[in-house]
Length: 363
Image 1 (cartoon, one colour):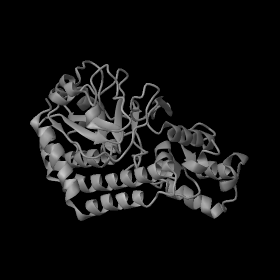
Image 2 (cartoon, helix red, strand yellow; image 1 turned 90 degrees about the horizontal axis):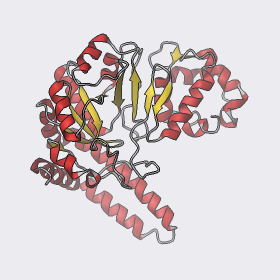
Image 3 (spheres, helix red, strand yellow; image 1 turned 45 degrees about the vertical axis):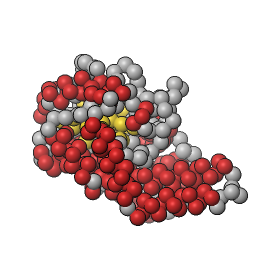
Image 4 (cartoon, helix red, strand yellow; image 1 turned 135 degrees about the vertical axis):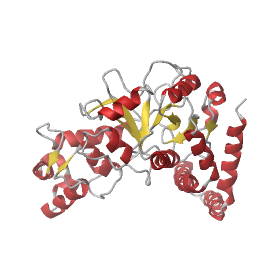
């Protein structure tokens, strides 16, 4: 049977979601909208309802992450060395604090040994662990779930971080560390609170919420009900609220995890959710970075916008507008753009002209 803490959190979280007038209004509006849409096709109805429903669920998850007492329960458990099954943009992820004890607890929950774990971080965590990277990608999840990604590096990991993470078996065979950022509102809030409490001295290690060797769940929706009961019984705290996202699934129907981007080779080690968008962004980056320096300067950027490959929608942009766009993407003002900055810009859809939709026509 699933432990009582899970049942309490699941029930409490659901009641909190229903408690607000906004929630009642939204459910009522959805029902009215569906009732009045008989003249539309069933496909359009379903798509519209799904979009409204997911947007509402994301907004509620964001509110819940900063106001629910259940988050205090989960945070205290995390700080007490417990394991947490947390909803993220790719389903559900296992968390614990770094250290031998934490790794052992996650090993027990998953029935796993020896394989390395990852780190769930924030921009601050990223900058501390990957000290060789000039700036963390700004992927705060206040827009959608499309930018959840794992960044991997061996060359840029600080010596202190590597030594600390070895205790948690969160360092790969070549000295590499994988960090997930922008996990979603619940995960982000927990990790930010760990950052604040421990002032960067403790890290959250993570792994996919499934039993070792069984792969991700095969379910058309993100639901705790799709997780193995054996795993649920072994986890200390399970956070279950209506999920704000839908899975993308592989040929076996299993949920895709996050894409894994190698910052040393500028290539993807592993495909994942929203991989088409990730490939488009990398293709555009490589098209602009003609000399293979892994950075884009203003001259590279202007040349790309003058090329035939840029496509009709971008070909006639005034030079002043191109320069302003370059400065907007170059978040740290270094005078060059790296992949993380371009990924952040395009995935956030900060431009109505230079975005994934227009880039897909040039890649």
